[in-house]
Image (cartoon, rainbow, N blue to C red; front, top):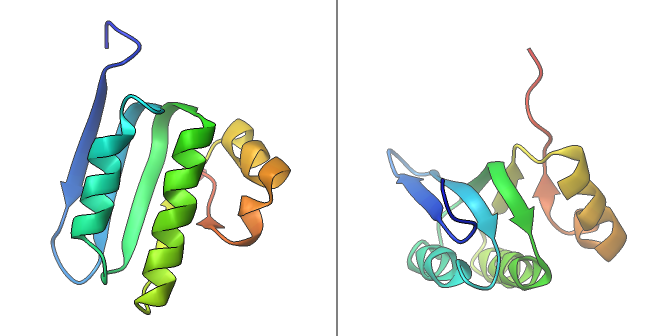
Length: 108
C-alpha cells in the first residue's frame, strides 16, 4: 500500500459465520465501509480479522463497541481475531478487552 489511507476489506461469507479481514489503517477515514459491512451482517456471527491492521484509532474502537452491542442485542457475537500485543494493549487501557472477545494471532 502506497498511501496511509489505503485499505482493503475482504468478506468471506461461506456459511453461518462470516469473516471480515481488514488490511491497513482502521481509522475515521476508512470506517464507513467497515460500519456498513457490519450493519449489513447484523444478526449473524462475525469474526473480524485485524492481523493486518496497521492502526486502530478511537473512532474504530467506537465502531467496534457499537457493533458488539448490536450483535449481542440480536443474540450473536462479534469476535476479533489476530490482535497484536499493541492492539490488545489499547483494548486493555480502554476496558474494551472485557467486552470484546479478542484473540491474539495464532502461533506456529
